[in-house]
Image (cartoon, helix red, strand yellow):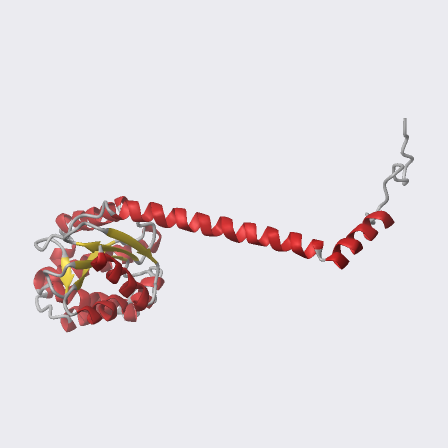
Length: 256
């Protein structure tokens, strides 16, 4: 039985942990032989491989979910480019998302290289943590399209994204600036525009787009489903990627 006296450590313990000479010597031999570095390298490689495997599994799951995206509907969807394009970039967007702000204009840049073989489909995906302003942006964008045309939605959305403070801050000049970019997109009847944003059918359309995005594996914005409208082949691209990444997705969809 070992008894610890007040102020004295138990036998075999010290107030500071020190390596024994034998352990220090072993570590020195491992260092000198390179075995320790090799073990660390193997550990890092295993960690990197696990990360890659997880990313591949996530991509596989997202690609499987992408097949659930609603088929492009010429009467319902807001489309930029050739309506009969073989491939669509279905973009789920939040007008208060800082990453969408960075992404604005990128899909247009990507499809420009495909001579009408690809178009863009805009679907609303205002994120709840961006507050009422994100939903308000979605309602106004949809209502501008109803009053003018689908092209006006893209003009309005890109202007909003360019000017917003993002993260729910909205446009710096408030309602007056909303009307200003709506006018630039072609809207003229602002009383009708305001009434449209209060229409429950518009709010339901936005909710339906969100539900479609969730079924499609969209967890954040911007999220893109690249869809071959003839074969149904679909793949998922997440985040504010460069145009080149979208172009690669279009090429893959055209090949399938």
